[in-house]
Length: 334
Image (cartoon, rainbow, N blue to C red; front, side):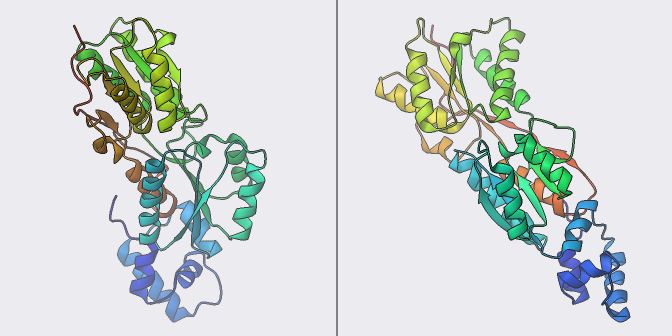
């Protein structure tokens, strides 16, 4: 991310607390003229420009935000937490990590209670919390700053960091087509995640771009877990004719597909190619190592925290995916 000045730097150079910097930025009373002058000089020298969200946060003076998550992938959760934590700490904010149930009837009331009880200044929402429209409406009505990581709904509104899942899934499908596969199956992720629909759409679009008919029989539902990957793969390999390639919506499900293939003594990738999505640590821990899409999860979380707290004035940022070709995919069998 950029090296633009932060409120933490202003506080350190001016020799005052975050709270005092906040009071000066918000033109509050109870600040001596000498202190005010010193802070203003540092602000001018660093060309510090707090965003509207940062000004709102500063005025509340708690310097505490929360990351809300509801995700079955340990890899995804870990890297979102790490990216957000590092950026928040660098900007002088404490980050609370809060799991939620996005399907719970009391999601909104629980989050609002958390905001009040912890005196939160803002929220970082990770998928699928990003799609909880009732929560977004409640936060908008409350006027509480929040930023979303990889939103699917309302992409053009509010602060968000994102990656194009459709384009990424097209890239993986294109790779499989380019090495000769025509009967390509897809294991979809959790329906609560818009990303699973976007990846399915990218797969479908790329098949059609190559004149390959979309076959719904080759699409099986998963939930982003290893277990669902094994179950989906058993179902796919029972098809006649069976697929020559399986594209799983994340690496956990792809690892499940690999496990079933090994159990059935299927040669990989000679008889069956398997690909994933994320480039998690698991991708290189399995055999053969997974061909996958690198999703910059940690960077997306870092960027989200920067948008919320960094004072750039930006509202959205888009990061790129990367196709990583390893040994789990190869030419289609003759």
